[in-house]
Image (tube, rainbow, N blue to C red):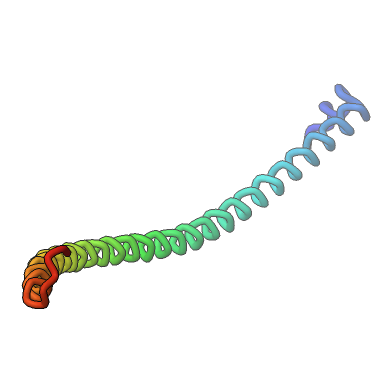
Amino acid sequence: MDWTIFKEFGLPGLIVGGLFSLVFIMMKWQMSFIVETRSAHNEERRVWHSLDMSKAKLLDELVSSVKRHDEKAEERGRFVREEHLKFSDQQDKTCECLIEVKEGLLRVNGHTKI
């Protein structure tokens, strides 16, 4: 070892060199800690992302199921509306017929006004 460096910088140089070495070791330790923490966070994000994706897939299936139900309900509703329209037409015909029967009965019984 060359002791002339020690003679040149003296005790303050040795202290500063030791501090720099200490800072270097601490920074190296801190960087390894950050790398470990980052890898743990990445794994956690991967797990949560897969959970979110499964929930998104489930939500998409639910939305498509609701859309199919709405389409079927619309078809059923259209059929029911058509049936109600037919019933309404039939009721109108029945009511017209009953009015004629009522007028006829009133005439037979001698009533001239309805």
